[in-house]
Length: 194
Ligand code: SAH
Image (tube, rainbow, N blue to C red; front, top):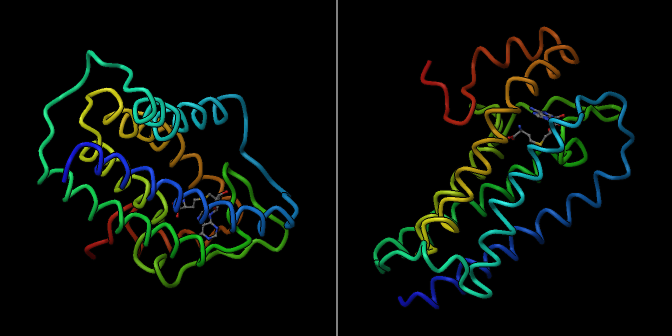
């Protein structure tokens, strides 16, 4: 594995990531939004996350900026990053398939929104965010640059910690006891050990 191969793997899997999202985003667009917790803060968080996971690494892969932050390349880290990125992609696909038309890029409840509690949602409440965490870890392992590598963890981390409690509040207000019971038997991004 060379630094170039590592970057090519990152870009190829990032395209796969985008294609999965594109396919399901088109489907869910047809379902009307009946309640939303979107706002300026939520939009800002989303832009920060998109920059860290998309813009910053893509600029780095394309033109090598920022040079000052280059770090040594270790093939073993890049191999590990590839495996984690593939796992993240698989997980991302499963969560999109399970959520179907209930998916939204932000915090929305759609018409006839169904609470999904099976499949990858059985033991984890936010498996799509688990997939994003895995992807961000893979980015740090695959890209031998401190800024481009860690931008994903920082960008997504800011979105995750700024959003997850608000999302759960919205789900509780919408699904009441069903979500409360669901929360008791699940963990946020790891399976609950109870
Ligand atoms: N937090 C989830 C979903 C991310 S997509 C995950 O990480 O897997 C965000 C949208 O998913 C929100 O607008 C919310 O309405 C919806 N959502 C979150 N959990 C859900 C669930 N268990 N069932 C159905 N929709 C859900």
